[in-house]
Image 1 (cartoon, one colour):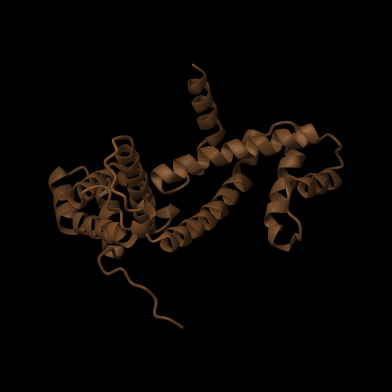
Image 2: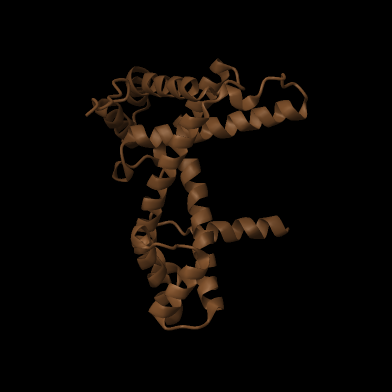
Length: 244
């Protein structure tokens, strides 16, 4: 068994300092906490992420400064009940770095400033893929927990509720179901709910998809899932704005 990895630069003291910072009204005390504990941990975390994933389409110092500012902006969202501070700020910083690096790469392409070297040759694809796969698994588990606690918020009609509950039951059993495609899913739902109307099943699944999109967007931006938030509303507002 390999040794457990330890992040000596981002410890429980760092987490406690962040919690104290968020609950503190004394600006002088907040400055001390940030300067002596939080700031150095943020900068080390960002430096490691930049070098690990080779985010080099933005100057290092610029990226370090911008990402640090982003973490400071998101610091008040951190809630210990949603997990460790290290995990939260790693996700927030990594997502920001990915978005910024892609944006700068796209800008270089548009301005024809990119050299002939292949963009992807400068990024460790396996590391990115493994990290994303793990993040997807972690997010999906959190998302299913959210749905189990909130599905009644989105489905009011009795028949819709039955379908919604059945979908969640099938998700919980996904590892033991041999075939898990759309046709098989619809068939199983029809059998379990005793319904022949595929449109009603599609309606519920489409609502779940919209909730998922809204939850993913929030998670990517903030690094956690707010279990009291209405993510369907978020997507509906976005779609209305696009139609204007």
